[in-house]
Image 1 (cartoon, rainbow, N blue to C red):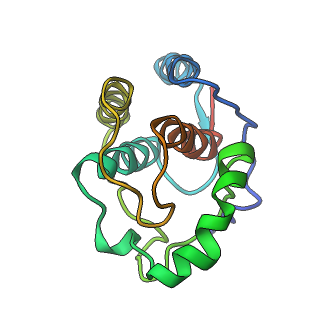
Image 2: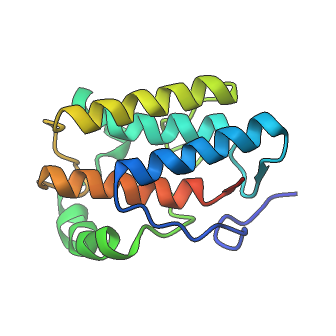
Length: 162
């Protein structure tokens, strides 16, 4: 049975800082250790964590071609929504055309490995501004790049229920 990501139960999250995000990760980890963590949606915890880590790391190491929409598509449709995404959050169920599972960057790894990767990417983001601009969202300030990572985390971590 396939779960519709748009209608799957999610927590309504709002992270105002990386510290807020870290506190939620701590709660998720504690719930996992206690055996009480629940998940909705279709991705495993490891896939969620590695996906979030990958998108932060792309802004340091370069974005794969699969997430580089045609320039005109970016300028006409994605970039005009940037301010709304940064303010209100990102919508569930959006699929990147031409990708096998609707996106990239997620790997089937154990919970602990995925969480360690995501925490390492957050450390990197907190210490050094990303030098590479998003091909979809274009040039952004360091604060907006951080805000985008927080909105992205709200979306995906909302499917984990500590």
